[in-house]
Image: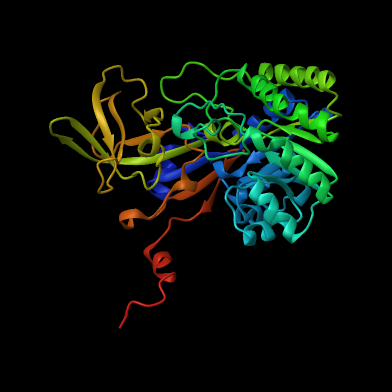
Length: 412
């Protein structure tokens, strides 16, 4: 198998395993698809890449070149985005449960601020009154591929409850805020085109009274992200063109019905931009016949935690054995000393032996960014490929990196 013209085996020999590989041409292709679907070039939408999916500075620089903005969830992410050259006007910050120090760091960087709670608003105006403010609203409903990535509803920790929405905007206006946005986000991994206009309708249901009672108009209405990609055994894909068309049509209907002004539609795709552009390359280290057949690999949940965290499964290919029809059921596991370090159970794969190369697909989002050096298994290197040329964008972590943070080994 090759990625963007470069053979996996060559990359494996050059950089070792485990190894993350990103196809930068695919990332650009994904961004362009979203821009067209949401009429970005016709000034109908604001697109913010949800950088928590993969905040590598090389990816952020690519995002900058496309004209798309960045969605950040912490002061650290804001500062990484700024270092990558993203203009503050193209950065939207949506934190949660932040301290006053966090808010001050964000405010001093002059980015757009979207607040998760009324208490955050109270902290912010003690620092200063921003020209623009937005609130994240939890409409009491949620949706997500897994319960762990459902971000709306009564059990979700995110967003302003419906009972506080009117008060929040009224207080902001009285404090001297001049421009306003509104935001909601119900969950991730959605493959249903109807979901996104429905989210917009739920958001407007909450802010129409704000328009009527407080009198403000909105600069943007943000429906968050959640644009899904197909993973293992999912045949359906999200029709992005249909999604954009339906959502923009719904925006026009609602704006006219409730006299909301001339707001742009804001979206925050993360997974959709980088997910299918990333691969985790790993080596088979052991084949063990036990009560089950285990295939041990040199990646673990320290490299890709999604399966252990919420049961996610990735498509797996065996390099050089893609066309072998004979398969057997195996469990694929890593080297971490935890029984949750199992990527998949009863997966049908070709007969495997030590030295075979497994390729985990759809690994560009929430992969390397969530990795850790648990068990002193150090974080993997990362390679970017663009126009058939490879670049090492992150070297493999070493034990020396671990020891650089240690101030002393002698406590008396």
